[in-house]
Image (tube, rainbow, N blue to C red; front, top):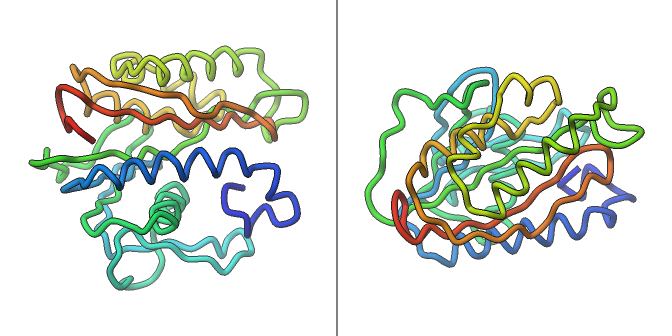
Amino acid sequence: MLAPEIARAASFELDPLRAACDAVVRRLLAAELDWLLVLGAGPRAVRYPATDHGSLAGYGVDLRARLGTGAAAGVPRLPLALTLGGWLLARAGGHRSVVGVQVGPDGELPGEIEAPTGRGGLLVMGDGSARRGPHPPGWPDPRAEPHDAAVAAALAAGDPARLAGLDPALGAELMAAGVPAWRAAGRLLAGARVRAELLHHEAPYGVGYLVAGWNVIDGPGAGG
């Protein structure tokens, strides 16, 4: 639903969400980063180079997005989270040195991911619980709203340890697709001091949408 082409006539309902996403991505790219990792969850840990791209054809939309700014290579193979990450980057002008990272269900990273040098950034893609409100995509669950509130508090506080400590089993039960990626980001930023801002937290369709911007002022990826 993030892409207007999918939401169509109802796309205006998510204008505040898109505006928050665009603001965060513009800040990220304005930081003049040496490298950028786009994180999203999936069934296993996989690394995708900047030339890879994805498609929203499965949603009835002829929209493609690549990770980097160069020419796309091969057939579309990015998962949804990374496709939308590439789409957001393209809206803000893109970045040449991007690696897509699909993390596994527990937040595990691919073995070939190494700690890059220089100024870096993370674009972490994922939803909160899809069991919120009276008519969510999944069955309503009274734990869903407190779960997302705890995530929002961790994002607002700039607390990597709280993100790394999210329960992946609970996240799966609550259909919170972002939990593995948030866990991975928390681990990558372990020990960092962060200046944080929570820009958006709503659940208009029974799904928690959260947008936050972090600026690492001391620790891994400082400045990104």
